Length: 320
Ligand code: GYE
Image (cartoon, rainbow, N blue to C red):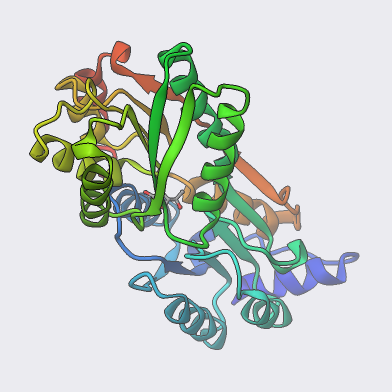
């Protein structure tokens, strides 16, 4: 509980001696969305590793994709008097009340990999990629690759109402502006999962002349793309050739598909959002230093030209 004293000092601002104890006396509650994708599972693994490295007691709650379970978990963490809360918010809205309760309890909240539509004073910082930029990078890759040739695009969106689904769509559409050869003819949520991604792609293929009208797939994450690749193959078409495949996350399995020529490009999202979050928390605990409201992680484009087998082998051990 030493951290709480330090926190109250920070709130009082002047004349406080901040806790000199290490992070080892810190307890952090982590409300995780679930394990809908390979990337999410890796984020959970890495978060636990990062807590272990710092001797932090991590209380983990899996919400099974339900916001009400996340809100319950946050209330339980507040009741337990944890030193801080991490949350990956499944959707962007509906957080004001519970974040207000955490603020009233002087418990700092850090958002991981997704953002919320709430007053920024209700959380300490958000550790996320630039989700709009990711969609933009994917769109620009498709613009360059099609080089003016007519191309009907189908889109597998992430979880409805989540900040990545909203922002990745926005960024992709911005990139396509002014390139009338590219048309998004179908767009539907695949909820970031392989199963749903396959199912929705099957419906797109059926609706678009068995897939012959489709030139490219943009999936908001690799797991939906991997599911869709299966559907494209089962429809007798060659993914990566008959239908270009571009997605986001850069999980190992998309590199396996790339190495087989079945996927074309992905935008990397690090699963290590917790490292920067724990560092920001430690700096605040030590001397009350508030982090910026956004700690941005890198986004890097990978294509088949980047030795996908080598990238697959390198990524395999990193929590996936
Ligand atoms: O791309 C996906 C996961 O919130 C940005 O959530 C994250 C997304 C990620 O389901 O694989």
